[in-house]
Structures are given as structure tokens and as C-alpha cells.
Image (cartoon, rainbow, N blue to C red; front, side):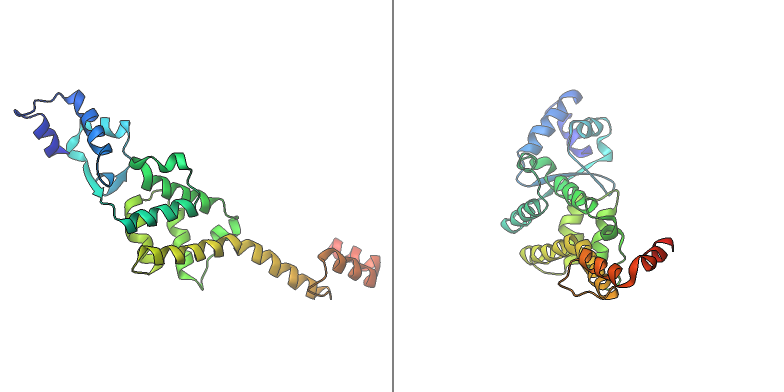
Length: 220
């Protein structure tokens, strides 16, 4: 932003410092693409506070515009749909990528603790996705357009969306599948059939071995 400020405050324009944030906000809102403000390597959401900070130290900040394509637009739209980003939030172009990442993290944090903290030693991609979403700080543009596609491993965005859908479905079902597995194994342990209810299996087992056996197990 340093070069921009020098130009705007130069002899040709002579713009006052206090007006420049308003000018930048209007210009950014009319850009064809998604703007990303950087300070060093850290991405920042475009906001009034950030524009005021830029106004104080323009040399500390830079602007990158993620140019839109139909493939990128469809990719982001599918992510918004998958992670249930509200329509009122979707309409804000300035924070669109940040909002997608925010709702991806909200989904991850809503998973049962067992699912969140499982090691996934046999599924490196799932393990890495969980690690990525657990980070306290994520650069949204870098994550959505570099890290996530690299992790999912496909050349096209639409292919990566399909891989991600399957991964999300797997994580959503992970805890329920564990519970179902434990119930089936418990039924086998207590001599029941898979089709029996757990209550029926336990009642039958108690009836077979009597109250004393049940009391012994309770005490231990």
C-alpha cells in the first residue's frame, strides 16, 4: 500500500490521509475478484479497523486479489453449501473466503471429541485435514486454494470437492460407527444375536446367570 499512498498523496491527486481509507474501501468493493490484505505472510480480513491500520502504516501492508474463474466460483459455492454458510454471510465478497474457513472450523469443532482427537493412523489425509482445521490461525486464501487442493490430491476443483464430501461424510459417521461396533461386540460378549436389542441381550444374560453373578460384576 506504500506506493498507492505515495501516488494518492502526491502532487497529481493531493489526497488527504483521512479520506484514503474511504477511497480504498470503495475501490476494493468494486474489484473483480476477492481481495486479501497481507501483513508479512499473514492474511487479514478487510474491515474498517484494518483500513485504519493501513492508513497509519501503509508500508506494513499489501493487497492481493484472487481473480475469479467459473471453476473457483463453483468450488467456493460448493464449500459454502457443504458447510452450511448462511446466505447473508455468502453475499459479503470481502470476507467470503474467511467465512468459508470459519464455518469449516465450526463443523470440525462440532464433531464428538473422539472424532476430533482420533489419530487416524491408517488415513493420513483425514489426519492432516483434522490437524489443519484445528489450527488457531489459518490463512484462508492459502488454505482454500493451495493447502486443501494439495491435500485432496486432484487436479480439478470439482474433483477435490467430491473427495472432500466423502471425507466429511466419513468423519460425520465416525463416532456412530464406533458406537455401533461396540454394541455389536458387547452383544457377542453377552451371548446375544446382532439383531437383538442390547437391553434384551443383557436381560437374558442376567436371567441366565442370576442376581448373584450380576451383583458380583457390579461390585467389580
